[in-house]
Image 1 (cartoon, protein in one colour):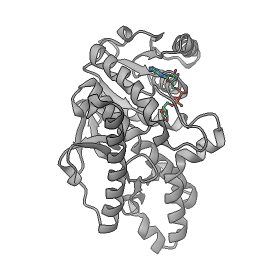
Image 2 (cartoon, helix red, strand yellow):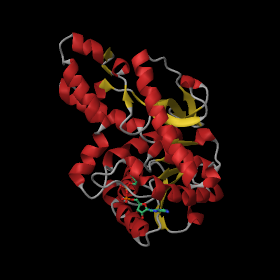
Image 3 (cartoon, rainbow, N blue to C red):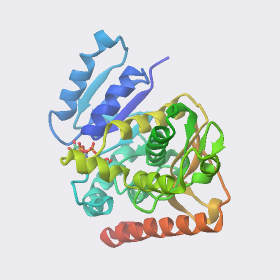
Image 4 (spheres, rainbow, N blue to C red):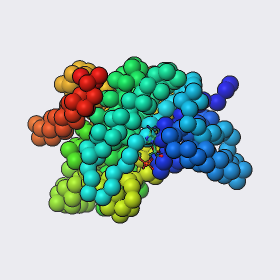
Length: 320
Ligand code: APR
């Protein structure tokens, strides 16, 4: 059987890391696409040359032509510009919207059967725009944010409790931005919900609140340290987890920016929700029940996302 084909649209910091991870995990043959001449070719060759030592079988290539992504099973989109210190994800809207138009059309014309994972920010609005421009079925286009946000949350919690990250689960909802909603009630240490961990004296409410805030600011913390760009190792790892769930029909329950029409009281929009990812793409959105406070936080996150989608419609009238 032929190996799956994975197209990485954008061969920058995240794109290169995605290629390396996909090769090491032998998820398929990899095509790196970028408008910057030499970048995808150089990264593809460099990673291919790591193959003999690592011992993976995966074909690597770089291109500036959308024709080379033809028939891709998975497309992961990182094309666009990342944040610099002091910028919010929303500041990227105008530039990255134009990029989503060309990428969406490229995928529509050459890889219409792919499962598409968008990483470009501001995430929830960009994945919506990418879906509009590509015209692919909603269940085949999603955005990577929740896996990363919950990974950050899990990391901070594991440090606080001094336990393995593997035993910490975390639940994050809403838009990928300052309004994201980490739900402590649904986050656990080996099945024990975080509010119970507070009651058991393992941590205090103040410390937990600080961890929640640090999770919300997780991206900005890294931008502040790097100064020249934004996070790339953890974002790439998170997207690979989603791609693997699709390619291996794992039915993973993962939070991601998915199209929600009916569940959680939402009518036809992209926002971070718990989903099941398998061979059908986003096979299910989990319609969880929230408390009044959680619902209020989620509602404000939903309005922030809606505001960005409206801004996109204002910039590009074909989206209105
Ligand atoms: N088509 C294809 N590639 C493009 C286009 C385009 N129209 N415009 C820009 N690119 C490429 C750039 O040439 C660059 O190589 O996208 C790549 C982006 O890479 P980086 O600048 O290194 O950014 P990265 O850190 O990978 O982040 C990419 O993901 O997390 C988000 O906020 C982040 O929006 C940003 C995206």
